[in-house]
Length: 382
Ligand SMILES: *Cc1c(COP(=O)(O)O)cnc(C)c1O
Image (cartoon, rainbow, N blue to C red; front, side, top):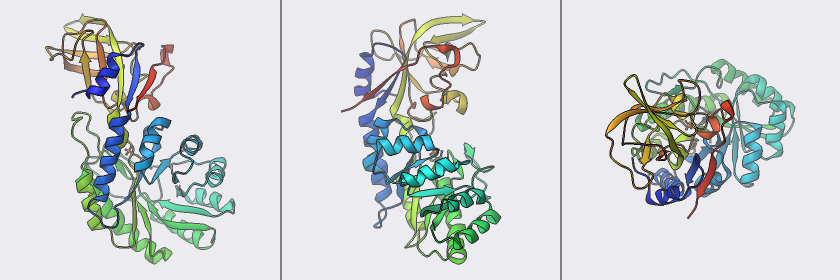
Protein backbone atom coordinates (compact mmCIF):
# COMPACT_ATOMS: atom_id res chain seq x y z
CA UNK A 1 0.00 0.00 0.00
CA UNK A 2 1.61 3.25 -1.17
CA UNK A 3 0.42 6.82 -1.18
CA UNK A 4 0.88 8.49 -4.59
CA UNK A 5 3.55 11.25 -4.42
CA UNK A 6 1.12 14.09 -5.21
CA UNK A 7 -1.15 12.94 -2.37
CA UNK A 8 1.79 12.55 0.00
CA UNK A 9 3.05 16.06 -0.63
CA UNK A 10 -0.48 17.41 -0.13
CA UNK A 11 -0.92 15.45 3.10
CA UNK A 12 2.41 16.73 4.42
CA UNK A 13 1.10 20.28 4.15
CA UNK A 14 -2.22 19.66 5.89
CA UNK A 15 -2.81 21.78 8.95
CA UNK A 16 -5.84 20.63 10.85
CA UNK A 17 -6.62 16.92 11.23
CA UNK A 18 -8.54 14.76 10.74
CA UNK A 19 -9.12 15.48 7.08
CA UNK A 20 -10.59 13.74 4.11
CA UNK A 21 -8.37 14.13 1.06
CA UNK A 22 -9.74 13.22 -2.34
CA UNK A 23 -7.29 12.56 -5.15
CA UNK A 24 -9.15 13.96 -8.15
CA UNK A 25 -6.35 13.43 -10.72
CA UNK A 26 -6.17 9.79 -9.60
CA UNK A 27 -9.94 9.44 -9.80
CA UNK A 28 -10.00 10.97 -13.27
CA UNK A 29 -7.38 8.51 -14.54
CA UNK A 30 -9.23 5.60 -12.92
CA UNK A 31 -12.59 6.59 -14.43
CA UNK A 32 -10.99 7.00 -17.84
CA UNK A 33 -9.39 3.55 -17.54
CA UNK A 34 -12.76 1.99 -16.68
CA UNK A 35 -14.41 3.76 -19.59
CA UNK A 36 -11.71 2.61 -22.02
CA UNK A 37 -11.79 -0.96 -20.73
CA UNK A 38 -15.56 -1.11 -21.19
CA UNK A 39 -15.36 0.25 -24.73
CA UNK A 40 -12.39 -1.80 -25.89
CA UNK A 41 -13.87 -5.19 -26.81
CA UNK A 42 -17.03 -4.06 -28.52
CA UNK A 43 -17.49 -2.22 -31.79
CA UNK A 44 -20.90 -1.22 -30.44
CA UNK A 45 -19.26 0.73 -27.60
CA UNK A 46 -19.74 -1.62 -24.66
CA UNK A 47 -22.27 -1.26 -21.86
CA UNK A 48 -23.52 2.12 -20.75
CA UNK A 49 -21.85 3.16 -17.51
CA UNK A 50 -23.92 4.84 -14.82
CA UNK A 51 -22.33 5.82 -11.51
CA UNK A 52 -24.29 4.95 -8.35
CA UNK A 53 -24.25 8.29 -6.52
CA UNK A 54 -24.89 6.81 -3.09
CA UNK A 55 -21.26 5.59 -2.99
CA UNK A 56 -20.09 9.20 -2.88
CA UNK A 57 -22.08 12.09 -4.31
CA UNK A 58 -19.69 14.95 -3.46
CA UNK A 59 -20.02 17.58 -6.17
CA UNK A 60 -16.29 17.70 -7.12
CA UNK A 61 -16.34 13.92 -7.52
CA UNK A 62 -19.45 13.94 -9.70
CA UNK A 63 -17.87 16.62 -11.88
CA UNK A 64 -14.70 14.55 -12.36
CA UNK A 65 -16.73 11.47 -13.31
CA UNK A 66 -19.14 13.28 -15.62
CA UNK A 67 -17.10 13.03 -18.86
CA UNK A 68 -16.57 9.29 -18.40
CA UNK A 69 -20.06 8.10 -17.50
CA UNK A 70 -23.32 7.90 -19.45
CA UNK A 71 -25.42 8.83 -16.45
CA UNK A 72 -25.90 8.75 -12.70
CA UNK A 73 -28.02 6.37 -10.66
CA UNK A 74 -29.74 8.09 -7.75
CA UNK A 75 -31.69 6.57 -4.88
CA UNK A 76 -33.62 9.38 -3.23
CA UNK A 77 -35.20 12.76 -3.81
CA UNK A 78 -32.25 14.29 -1.96
CA UNK A 79 -29.72 12.72 -4.31
CA UNK A 80 -31.91 13.67 -7.25
CA UNK A 81 -31.97 17.38 -6.39
CA UNK A 82 -28.26 17.43 -5.56
CA UNK A 83 -27.11 15.58 -8.69
CA UNK A 84 -29.42 17.56 -10.99
CA UNK A 85 -28.03 20.79 -9.55
CA UNK A 86 -24.42 19.56 -9.87
CA UNK A 87 -24.74 18.02 -13.35
CA UNK A 88 -27.72 19.74 -15.01
CA UNK A 89 -27.51 17.69 -18.20
CA UNK A 90 -26.73 14.23 -16.84
CA UNK A 91 -29.00 11.33 -17.64
CA UNK A 92 -30.46 10.03 -14.41
CA UNK A 93 -31.90 6.70 -13.30
CA UNK A 94 -33.92 6.74 -10.10
CA UNK A 95 -33.93 3.52 -8.08
CA UNK A 96 -34.51 2.42 -4.53
CA UNK A 97 -37.39 1.18 -2.39
CA UNK A 98 -40.12 3.33 -0.83
CA UNK A 99 -40.20 6.20 -3.30
CA UNK A 100 -42.79 8.74 -2.18
CA UNK A 101 -45.32 10.44 -4.47
CA UNK A 102 -43.42 13.66 -3.94
CA UNK A 103 -40.17 12.01 -5.09
CA UNK A 104 -41.83 10.45 -8.12
CA UNK A 105 -43.29 13.80 -9.16
CA UNK A 106 -39.91 15.44 -8.65
CA UNK A 107 -38.33 12.75 -10.83
CA UNK A 108 -40.58 13.73 -13.74
CA UNK A 109 -40.16 17.46 -13.07
CA UNK A 110 -36.37 17.11 -13.13
CA UNK A 111 -36.27 14.94 -16.26
CA UNK A 112 -35.22 11.65 -14.80
CA UNK A 113 -34.57 9.38 -17.74
CA UNK A 114 -35.51 6.06 -16.12
CA UNK A 115 -37.41 5.17 -12.97
CA UNK A 116 -36.52 1.73 -11.65
CA UNK A 117 -39.88 0.49 -10.42
CA UNK A 118 -39.76 -1.47 -7.17
CA UNK A 119 -43.35 -2.70 -6.81
CA UNK A 120 -46.79 -2.79 -8.51
CA UNK A 121 -47.99 -0.20 -5.98
CA UNK A 122 -45.19 2.12 -7.01
CA UNK A 123 -46.08 1.61 -10.66
CA UNK A 124 -49.72 2.47 -9.93
CA UNK A 125 -48.61 5.68 -8.30
CA UNK A 126 -46.36 6.60 -11.25
CA UNK A 127 -49.26 5.87 -13.59
CA UNK A 128 -51.54 8.10 -11.53
CA UNK A 129 -49.28 11.08 -12.21
CA UNK A 130 -50.61 10.81 -15.77
CA UNK A 131 -47.37 11.98 -17.38
CA UNK A 132 -44.88 10.26 -19.71
CA UNK A 133 -42.39 8.25 -17.68
CA UNK A 134 -39.49 6.06 -18.84
CA UNK A 135 -39.28 2.97 -16.69
CA UNK A 136 -37.38 -0.22 -16.04
CA UNK A 137 -38.91 -2.90 -13.83
CA UNK A 138 -36.57 -3.94 -11.05
CA UNK A 139 -36.44 -7.72 -10.94
CA UNK A 140 -35.70 -9.77 -7.82
CA UNK A 141 -34.49 -12.98 -9.41
CA UNK A 142 -33.69 -16.15 -7.45
CA UNK A 143 -30.07 -16.51 -8.53
CA UNK A 144 -27.80 -17.76 -5.79
CA UNK A 145 -24.68 -15.64 -5.64
CA UNK A 146 -22.11 -17.38 -3.53
CA UNK A 147 -19.17 -15.21 -2.61
CA UNK A 148 -21.19 -12.00 -2.63
CA UNK A 149 -20.51 -9.47 0.13
CA UNK A 150 -24.18 -8.48 0.07
CA UNK A 151 -27.09 -10.22 -1.55
CA UNK A 152 -29.73 -7.71 -2.62
CA UNK A 153 -32.75 -9.95 -2.37
CA UNK A 154 -35.38 -9.39 0.34
CA UNK A 155 -37.32 -6.17 -0.20
CA UNK A 156 -35.64 -5.12 -3.45
CA UNK A 157 -37.38 -5.44 -6.77
CA UNK A 158 -40.14 -7.81 -7.79
CA UNK A 159 -40.59 -11.53 -8.27
CA UNK A 160 -42.08 -13.02 -11.41
CA UNK A 161 -45.69 -12.62 -10.22
CA UNK A 162 -45.30 -8.95 -9.43
CA UNK A 163 -43.48 -8.39 -12.73
CA UNK A 164 -46.45 -9.95 -14.54
CA UNK A 165 -48.79 -7.57 -12.75
CA UNK A 166 -46.61 -4.66 -13.87
CA UNK A 167 -46.45 -5.85 -17.48
CA UNK A 168 -50.23 -5.89 -17.61
CA UNK A 169 -50.52 -2.49 -16.00
CA UNK A 170 -48.04 -0.95 -18.44
CA UNK A 171 -49.82 -2.40 -21.45
CA UNK A 172 -52.97 -0.54 -20.41
CA UNK A 173 -51.28 2.81 -19.81
CA UNK A 174 -49.48 4.04 -22.91
CA UNK A 175 -47.92 7.03 -21.15
CA UNK A 176 -45.76 4.60 -19.19
CA UNK A 177 -42.83 3.71 -21.43
CA UNK A 178 -41.41 0.39 -20.40
CA UNK A 179 -37.87 0.00 -21.74
CA UNK A 180 -36.65 -3.10 -19.94
CA UNK A 181 -35.39 -4.69 -16.77
CA UNK A 182 -33.16 -3.57 -13.94
CA UNK A 183 -31.50 -6.16 -11.69
CA UNK A 184 -28.94 -5.28 -9.02
CA UNK A 185 -28.67 -8.62 -7.25
CA UNK A 186 -25.38 -8.74 -5.36
CA UNK A 187 -22.32 -6.77 -4.47
CA UNK A 188 -18.69 -7.66 -3.96
CA UNK A 189 -18.35 -9.97 -6.96
CA UNK A 190 -15.28 -10.36 -9.13
CA UNK A 191 -15.57 -10.33 -12.92
CA UNK A 192 -16.28 -14.06 -13.52
CA UNK A 193 -19.11 -14.16 -10.95
CA UNK A 194 -20.43 -10.84 -12.23
CA UNK A 195 -20.54 -12.23 -15.75
CA UNK A 196 -22.30 -15.36 -14.60
CA UNK A 197 -24.91 -13.19 -12.92
CA UNK A 198 -25.31 -10.96 -16.00
CA UNK A 199 -25.76 -13.97 -18.20
CA UNK A 200 -28.51 -15.36 -15.99
CA UNK A 201 -30.26 -12.00 -15.85
CA UNK A 202 -30.17 -11.73 -19.66
CA UNK A 203 -31.32 -15.33 -20.13
CA UNK A 204 -34.39 -14.54 -18.11
CA UNK A 205 -35.03 -10.93 -19.11
CA UNK A 206 -34.69 -11.00 -22.89
CA UNK A 207 -37.36 -13.67 -23.60
CA UNK A 208 -39.64 -12.18 -20.96
CA UNK A 209 -39.39 -8.69 -22.41
CA UNK A 210 -39.89 -9.97 -25.97
CA UNK A 211 -42.69 -12.46 -25.34
CA UNK A 212 -44.52 -10.79 -22.50
CA UNK A 213 -44.03 -7.11 -23.31
CA UNK A 214 -43.30 -7.10 -27.03
CA UNK A 215 -40.06 -5.19 -26.53
CA UNK A 216 -37.60 -5.98 -29.30
CA UNK A 217 -34.85 -3.49 -28.44
CA UNK A 218 -34.73 -3.86 -24.68
CA UNK A 219 -32.58 -2.21 -22.08
CA UNK A 220 -31.14 -4.36 -19.35
CA UNK A 221 -29.40 -2.77 -16.39
CA UNK A 222 -27.41 -5.50 -14.66
CA UNK A 223 -26.57 -3.35 -11.65
CA UNK A 224 -23.41 -2.53 -9.76
CA UNK A 225 -21.57 -4.39 -7.01
CA UNK A 226 -18.19 -4.83 -8.71
CA UNK A 227 -15.74 -6.14 -6.11
CA UNK A 228 -13.45 -3.89 -4.11
CA UNK A 229 -10.92 -5.90 -2.12
CA UNK A 230 -9.85 -3.95 0.96
CA UNK A 231 -7.14 -6.52 1.69
CA UNK A 232 -5.58 -5.92 -1.74
CA UNK A 233 -5.79 -2.21 -2.54
CA UNK A 234 -3.71 -2.63 -5.70
CA UNK A 235 -5.89 -5.36 -7.23
CA UNK A 236 -8.70 -3.74 -9.17
CA UNK A 237 -11.87 -5.24 -10.62
CA UNK A 238 -11.02 -6.67 -14.03
CA UNK A 239 -13.07 -4.28 -16.16
CA UNK A 240 -11.47 -5.47 -19.38
CA UNK A 241 -12.40 -9.13 -19.02
CA UNK A 242 -15.83 -8.16 -17.69
CA UNK A 243 -16.40 -6.05 -20.80
CA UNK A 244 -15.20 -8.85 -23.05
CA UNK A 245 -17.60 -11.26 -21.38
CA UNK A 246 -20.49 -8.81 -21.61
CA UNK A 247 -19.81 -8.21 -25.29
CA UNK A 248 -20.13 -11.93 -25.97
CA UNK A 249 -23.34 -12.18 -23.90
CA UNK A 250 -25.15 -9.26 -25.48
CA UNK A 251 -27.18 -9.90 -28.63
CA UNK A 252 -27.47 -7.07 -31.17
CA UNK A 253 -30.18 -4.57 -30.36
CA UNK A 254 -29.90 -4.98 -26.59
CA UNK A 255 -28.83 -1.91 -24.62
CA UNK A 256 -26.85 -3.10 -21.65
CA UNK A 257 -26.14 -0.84 -18.70
CA UNK A 258 -24.14 -1.17 -15.47
CA UNK A 259 -24.21 1.04 -12.38
CA UNK A 260 -21.18 0.54 -10.12
CA UNK A 261 -20.45 2.83 -7.18
CA UNK A 262 -17.80 1.50 -4.82
CA UNK A 263 -15.40 0.23 -7.50
CA UNK A 264 -15.43 3.68 -9.11
CA UNK A 265 -14.73 5.96 -6.15
CA UNK A 266 -13.38 3.86 -3.23
CA UNK A 267 -9.72 4.11 -4.21
CA UNK A 268 -9.26 7.87 -4.35
CA UNK A 269 -10.30 9.07 -0.92
CA UNK A 270 -8.04 9.18 2.15
CA UNK A 271 -8.96 9.79 5.77
CA UNK A 272 -5.90 11.40 7.32
CA UNK A 273 -5.45 11.79 11.04
CA UNK A 274 -2.80 11.80 13.74
CA UNK A 275 -1.82 9.75 16.77
CA UNK A 276 -3.02 11.06 20.14
CA UNK A 277 -1.81 8.24 22.36
CA UNK A 278 -0.12 4.87 22.26
CA UNK A 279 -0.80 2.51 25.11
CA UNK A 280 -0.26 -1.06 26.17
CA UNK A 281 -3.09 -2.79 27.94
CA UNK A 282 -2.78 -6.39 29.08
CA UNK A 283 -0.22 -7.17 26.46
CA UNK A 284 -1.98 -5.44 23.55
CA UNK A 285 -0.86 -2.22 21.91
CA UNK A 286 -3.47 0.40 21.01
CA UNK A 287 -2.83 3.41 18.85
CA UNK A 288 -5.44 6.04 19.65
CA UNK A 289 -6.14 8.31 16.69
CA UNK A 290 -7.86 11.69 16.46
CA UNK A 291 -11.38 11.18 15.08
CA UNK A 292 -12.78 7.71 14.71
CA UNK A 293 -15.23 5.47 12.94
CA UNK A 294 -17.91 8.18 13.27
CA UNK A 295 -15.93 9.75 10.40
CA UNK A 296 -14.95 6.52 8.63
CA UNK A 297 -17.47 3.84 9.36
CA UNK A 298 -16.39 1.57 6.49
CA UNK A 299 -14.24 -0.86 8.52
CA UNK A 300 -17.03 -1.34 11.06
CA UNK A 301 -19.79 -1.95 8.52
CA UNK A 302 -17.65 -4.20 6.37
CA UNK A 303 -15.87 -5.92 9.26
CA UNK A 304 -12.42 -5.42 7.75
CA UNK A 305 -9.13 -3.75 8.63
CA UNK A 306 -8.98 -0.46 6.76
CA UNK A 307 -5.69 -0.29 4.81
CA UNK A 308 -3.46 2.61 5.86
CA UNK A 309 -0.11 4.31 5.50
CA UNK A 310 1.73 5.51 8.62
CA UNK A 311 3.87 8.63 8.28
CA UNK A 312 6.21 9.71 11.03
CA UNK A 313 5.93 13.35 12.03
CA UNK A 314 9.22 14.07 10.28
CA UNK A 315 9.74 11.59 7.47
CA UNK A 316 8.30 8.94 5.21
CA UNK A 317 6.50 5.74 6.10
CA UNK A 318 8.64 3.38 8.16
CA UNK A 319 8.55 -0.41 8.06
CA UNK A 320 6.29 -2.27 10.50
CA UNK A 321 8.05 -3.50 13.63
CA UNK A 322 5.14 -4.49 15.87
CA UNK A 323 1.43 -5.24 15.90
CA UNK A 324 -1.20 -2.86 17.20
CA UNK A 325 -4.91 -2.06 17.05
CA UNK A 326 -5.81 1.33 15.59
CA UNK A 327 -8.75 2.93 17.38
CA UNK A 328 -10.48 6.31 17.46
CA UNK A 329 -11.84 8.59 20.17
CA UNK A 330 -15.26 7.01 20.62
CA UNK A 331 -16.26 5.40 23.91
CA UNK A 332 -17.17 2.07 22.35
CA UNK A 333 -15.09 -1.05 21.72
CA UNK A 334 -16.45 -1.00 18.16
CA UNK A 335 -14.44 2.08 17.29
CA UNK A 336 -11.71 0.10 15.54
CA UNK A 337 -10.14 0.97 12.18
CA UNK A 338 -7.81 -2.03 12.06
CA UNK A 339 -7.24 -4.79 14.60
CA UNK A 340 -3.89 -6.31 15.52
CA UNK A 341 -2.15 -5.20 12.32
CA UNK A 342 1.57 -4.64 11.64
CA UNK A 343 2.58 -1.03 12.34
CA UNK A 344 5.83 0.93 12.37
CA UNK A 345 6.91 2.57 15.64
CA UNK A 346 4.30 5.28 16.25
CA UNK A 347 4.09 8.11 18.71
CA UNK A 348 1.80 11.05 19.34
CA UNK A 349 1.92 13.48 16.43
CA UNK A 350 2.63 10.85 13.78
CA UNK A 351 0.17 10.75 10.90
CA UNK A 352 -1.93 7.81 9.80
CA UNK A 353 -3.71 7.98 6.45
CA UNK A 354 -6.44 5.43 5.79
CA UNK A 355 -6.75 4.45 2.16
CA UNK A 356 -9.81 3.35 0.16
CA UNK A 357 -11.97 5.91 1.92
CA UNK A 358 -13.52 7.39 -1.21
CA UNK A 359 -16.82 5.44 -1.19
CA UNK A 360 -19.29 4.56 1.56
CA UNK A 361 -16.99 6.33 4.02
CA UNK A 362 -17.87 9.80 5.38
CA UNK A 363 -21.40 9.66 3.93
CA UNK A 364 -22.37 6.49 5.81
CA UNK A 365 -20.81 7.52 9.13
CA UNK A 366 -22.61 8.63 12.30
CA UNK A 367 -20.96 12.05 12.49
CA UNK A 368 -22.60 13.46 15.58
CA UNK A 369 -22.02 10.59 17.96
CA UNK A 370 -19.95 12.05 20.86
CA UNK A 371 -19.86 15.54 19.32
CA UNK A 372 -16.21 15.54 18.29
CA UNK A 373 -15.17 18.10 15.64
CA UNK A 374 -15.86 17.22 12.02
CA UNK A 375 -12.95 16.60 9.64
CA UNK A 376 -11.88 19.09 6.96
CA UNK A 377 -12.43 18.17 3.31
CA UNK A 378 -9.83 18.63 0.59
CA UNK A 379 -10.10 17.92 -3.11
CA UNK A 380 -6.70 17.76 -4.77
CA UNK A 381 -6.96 18.93 -8.34
CA UNK A 382 -4.32 19.09 -11.01
C1 LIG B 1 -25.87 0.50 -4.15
C2 LIG B 1 -26.37 0.20 -5.48
C3 LIG B 1 -25.49 0.18 -6.58
C4 LIG B 1 -24.01 0.35 -6.44
O1 LIG B 1 -23.44 -0.71 -5.75
P1 LIG B 1 -21.84 -0.77 -5.55
O2 LIG B 1 -21.65 -1.96 -4.71
O3 LIG B 1 -21.44 0.50 -4.90
O4 LIG B 1 -21.24 -0.91 -6.92
C5 LIG B 1 -26.04 -0.03 -7.83
N1 LIG B 1 -27.37 -0.21 -7.99
C6 LIG B 1 -28.22 -0.20 -6.96
C7 LIG B 1 -29.65 -0.41 -7.21
C8 LIG B 1 -27.75 -0.01 -5.67
O5 LIG B 1 -28.61 -0.04 -4.65
